[in-house]
Length: 223
Image 1: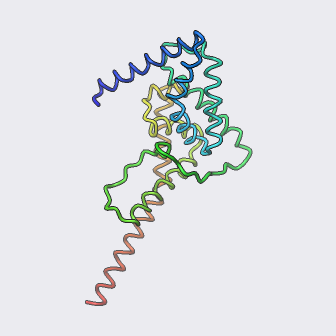
Image 2: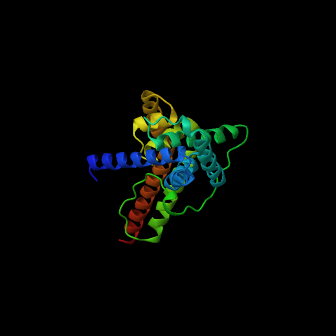
């Protein structure tokens, strides 16, 4: 899809959301149910990446939709409804993290379904062998663990920018931050993630070098 086509599709989606908002304000509950169907999976995915717990993420989404419904009259139609809704959900998710500050955050081993298992990684075009597939799954687990080590503010920016593909402007609006703040946090988040992942990749490189050295030694022994 070209840039112009993408913009057109987004504009049509925004107009569709706005029509549903108007209908909901007029008392049409089914219109709000349609908005829920449009965005519940996306909000769950965002919340889950932030709070790292399925039950908490479900609570975040339910609370976000409830608050959106209760305060629909506060929605400024100059903004995108999806961005406004994301801000409510993100605020709720960050509240969950703040409540955890007095206790140790417990990670959850969760089996993801469908597009909920979504991290922005590019896996090389490997041949389908079991060891390499295991390594790909292991890399995803390492990325999740590394993401959990980011502070709430950096994690929120990274989730929206790098996982959900929000623009800088959309991220700023969703988090109620300036563009400069979003840029700074995005850079810090990426640098910290790179730093956290570097140990794994360095270990992998060192292991490969040991394997090559071992192979050369064996070749030399039997030649």
